[in-house]
Image 1 (cartoon, helix red, strand yellow):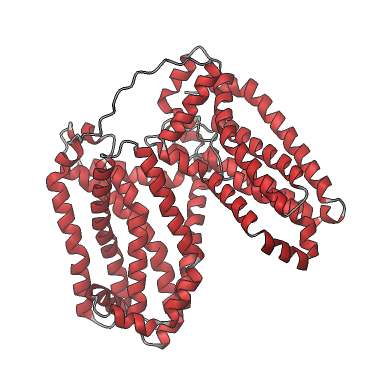
Image 2 (tube, rainbow, N blue to C red; image 1 turned 30 degrees about the horizontal axis):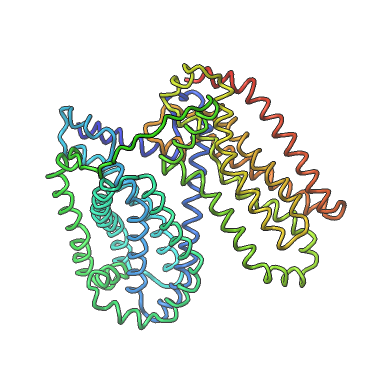
Amino acid sequence: MLKTLLRVRLAAFAAYFTGASRSQKKRSGAQKIGMLLLMLYCFAAFGMLFYTSFSALAGVYAKLSLGWLYFAMYAVAAFALMVFGTVFTAKAQLFEAKDNELLLSLPVRPRDILASRMVSLLLWNLLFGLMVAVPALLAWTQAARLPALGFVSFILLLPALACFSLAVTSLLAWALSLLGSRVRNKSLATIIGSVVFLGLYFAVIFRMNSYITQLAQNGAQIAAALSGAKVLVWLGRAMAGESAPALVWSLLATLAPFGLVSWLLSRSFTRIVTTKRGLPKVRYEEKALRTASADTALVRRELRRLGANPTYLLNSGLGVLFLLAAAVVLVIKRDVILDVLAQMPELASSLPVFLALAIGGMLGMTLFTPSSVSLEGRNLWILQSMPVSGAQVLRAKLRMADLLTLPAAVIASVCCACVTELSPLILLDSVLFARFANVLGLREGIVHAKLDWSNEAQAVKQSWAVMLTMLVCWGVLLAAGAAWLMWLAELVSPEAFLLGFGAVLLFLDTLLLRWLQTAGAERFSRLG
C-alpha cells in the first residue's frame, strides 16, 4: 500500500510542474510543456539571484581562507528557503488534508500515509535546496579549489539538510495548525500572515546588496561570532573539505532530529488528524432577512468565495496591492522624479506613455477572472441548474473583478497627476486595460477550464488560462511600448498615442465582451 500511496504522491508532484489534467489527456501536451518551461524559468531566475549573491562572497572568503564560513552561510540560506518554502504546504498535506479521514478508514497503516506525504515534502525541500546549492557550489569552484572530500560532503549533506528542514517544517506546520484551529476567521489570518511574510521577503530582497556587502567586509568578525555554533562549524568544515569527522557529526546533527520527529508523528498521527478542536462560540443575533436580485446575489457569491479562499485572493489580488503601493511611492517621491525629469527632458516627453504601460503591467498581474470558472470545479452543475443564464453568471464574475481592479486603476492614474498633466488620458487607458484583462481572463477561463482539480491551488496556480492571460496582457503592453520607442515617439505626440492605444483597447474590450455574451455563455452552459 505504501508503494501505491507513493505513486499517487509522485504523480501529483509531477502534475504540479506540468499542469496535467485528467480530462485533457489527448490535448495537454502543449500545456505540459508550457507549464514546465515556466517553472524552469522561475527556478533559473531564483538560481541566478543566489549565484549573484554567493559570487560576491566566494572571492572574498576564499582569499581570507574562510571556506567553512562560506558553506555555513550556504547551509543557513538553504535551510531558510526550504523551511519558508514548504511550511504552508506541510500544514496542508500533513495535518489539514481533506482525505485524511478517508484514508484512515481504509486498510492503510497511518505510518504509510505519513511516509508518503513526508516523501513528497522531502522532494519539495530538495528542489528548494538545489536552487541554493547549485549556485553556491558553482560560485565557490570559480573562486577556489574544492577538495574531493568537500564535493562528497556537499552532495551528502544536501539531502541531510532537506531532512533536517523537513523536521523543523513539520513541527512549525503542527504549531500553525493548532493555532489556526483556535482562530475564527482562518482566511483572514492566513492572508495577513502571508502579506506580512511577503513584506519581509521584499524588504530583504531590496536590501540584499547592502547585506552582501556587509557580510563580505566583516567576514573575520562573523567567523569569530559563529565559532561557538558547533553545528554550523561542522557543516562548513565538512563541505569545505577540511575534516572527515565534521562530516560524520554533521550527518548525525541533521538526520537525528528528522528521525525523532518522524517517530513522534507516526506514533500520534491518527490522534492529531482526527482530533476535533473547538472554535470560539459565535453568539447568534437575530437579523432581518435581506433579499436581492439574481445578478446582485451572484456578485456577492463571487466576493464571498474570494474572501474565503486565501490562495485565490493572494495569487490574484497581489497586483492591486503593488499598484496602490506604487501609486503612493509616486506621490511621496514626486520631487525626486521631477528633478530627474528636469535633467532628462527626452524622458519627460515619454513619461505619460511609460506610466500608462507600467499601470497596465501591474494590472496584468491582477487576474481574478481566469481561475474563477475553474474554481467552480465539480460543483459547476449547481450554477448550470439554477434559474439564471450563463451570461448572467459570467457578468457576475466580470463585475466582481471590475469592483476590485477598476478603482485601483483609477487611484493609480489620479496619482500620476503629480508628475504629468496627461493623467486623464492615463486614466482612460488604465481603466480600459483593466477591463481588457478581466474580459480576456474570463474568456480564457472558459476555453481552458480546469474542473478536475483535487486542490484549489491547482486551479489558481497551475491554470493554463491564468498563464495565457498574463502572457497576452504583457504581450500587448510590450508591443505598444516597442511601437512607441521604435517608431511612434518621433511621429506622434504622447496624447495621440494614448488616445490611439485607448481606441484599440476599447475595440478589444467590445469584441471580447460580445463573445462572452453569446458564444462564451453557450460554451459555459455546456462545460462539465
